[in-house]
Image (cartoon, rainbow, N blue to C red):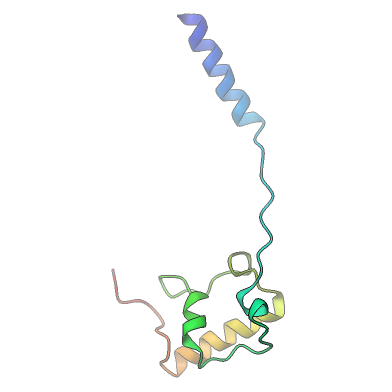
Length: 93
């Protein structure tokens, strides 16, 4: 019995030591896939998809946007919030 416990412990240590990381999948941006060149602040349906449940703007890693698209997205979300088309924070707690 003691031999089995040692072997399982060794297996666990080896797994922790030699962790394999999968490469992230390349994401196609919803913005570039639709063919739009400008992100409009009045298009709240597409902006809601780029905002988390708490109201935070999602990162480039999550959205798959380029740097220029992410800057346009951020300014569009901020404009929509200022114009009260999007909420700053969700009311659900």
